[in-house]
Length: 182
Image: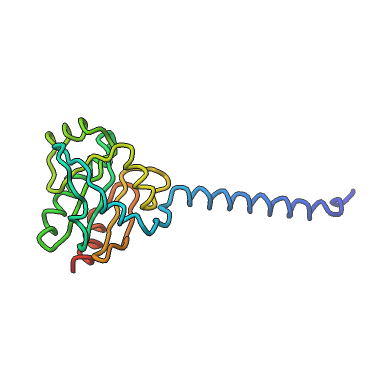
């Protein structure tokens, strides 16, 4: 009867260790790709410097939101989770806007589709049309995956307070927003 070949066990351990390290690296890279990245410092300033058409086609200067807490929701008419969360966002805006909370929906869609959506499903906050340029703006806010919906909370100083990728938990968002207006 012969025993294990000398060095075979060590080779197995080294190979297994390398495989585990590669798997760990792959998991980390995947997580970083889907997790919101650190936003560029100028993202809020870039947003507030823009004037985008609202759902009725009229220009809306976004600097009107400067100096107060703001919820920015990136969405599209074709995005089911986006559309599902909009009534909750609208109710949150209606409740907290008297306390100074601003909210804007940045539509990554065509003007015609956003106008049609707004006519069928009105919300209490302005919807603006950014088209595919809205995707680049969302990336500037840290959404490297380009996934929707994507929601950003900005404090009074114009600093990003929170970023939420995916359908929001409205209770959690309300807690965050109340802390900003409080």
